[in-house]
Image (cartoon, rainbow, N blue to C red; front, side, top):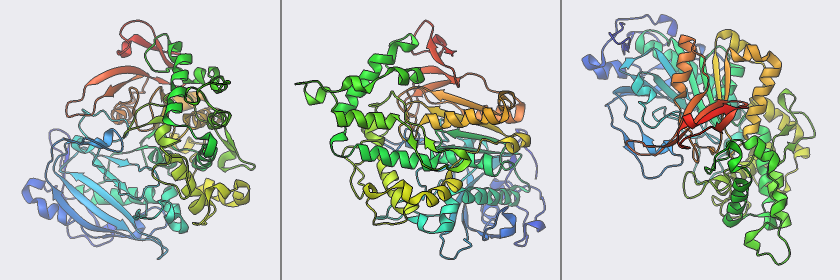
Length: 564
């Protein structure tokens, strides 16, 4: 094993090892160019369960194949803006494998590890999304990543991901796997830990030693996973980035179910009504930051100021120009907390309501904002249809398979009070709400959270509340040494609607490896193309500050300052 002049380690194998990792010894690196096929292919083997830090079956590397360098490609459409980009990647060894379950009825945990020919000594684990069930390859762009930057793999990181221990099946609800307890525990937290340990063992096989620094980046469900790693496995990662995390998962699912319930029948909002609310919010709050630019930069103040009841229909008013009493109630319910009758994990008993702004923001696909996440293009049905809002598809399915454990249940008949024991069990597994991050801080870990303030997949106020709980638990001075929370106004769940692109991997690495603590950053709104253009930029402010207009071009970040 040796370092090149650029500080990279070339891929080489400690060959002739038994299945036990204790027999692995560092060996002189074998450059891929010298014997590429043998170097990569020799990774195929069994990794014993003893190499995994929690109870587990063994891991099997099923294939290890050398991949040629590939160019950048941009697709016309995709589920998110970043998903349209397939970044240029270097030659690497693609490792595919699985981890055996303990319960023979549970599915395996599938994983992919990408090992660059020249390694920078770092690794990056990618988080998943939704209910997972799809293999995360680690070959794309991580959350919030600028579209014009070299991918982590191209920078020399080992990257890896997992399906979290189950595979979605055509014609089945994505939550069906939850019928098996081990599969659900793997989804909650165990699979990410197991795959992390297998990836480290594989790096030792390939490079002769483990990584210098380990990073985890995830968005949405992947953001929950990222926070779970800091809370449950505080010594496993050096730097963690959690974007729009579904942090209070149990509360979110119930609030999503309730949001669907109130938009049934007369409470349903058509796209025209969504646009009506969107325009009313802008009229009330757009200029609150000092500039009329189509963005609500201070959504916290706007939520206090905006009154949905002012849109209530008056006598003889055309229905498309106002909201009915049922529609007003639906919007007010969306904005209000969801309350449980008993405490969930870490003393919480509610989920905060959603905020305001971005209700009709175009995002991924033909519609965004409420049209994608809340109301869909058709009112909630049983069973949920793809045309329903995503939160109803997720919430209704979870009521059947996760909480009631009755696949035939009509979500409209679900009563949380009848399932409180199961709700508390799920909360203890799934909710990443433990504010005691002291072990992660002592380890030297750094954590960055980012909330999008026009997010309707989950409420940004859940993440804000978590950060404030950490501050209350540990003290602001201590928290400032290892944690940051940023908020991006106008941005929806997947990074559309306003400036959202920032290289958080570089920010984390600077903090972890050079002690450079981040202050106010800058986010850009980039077009999705081979050579991205920046439409506008904003300061990315630390909570509780927000970008207030000073003077100058509203498309320039320098025209704004972070204000309280």
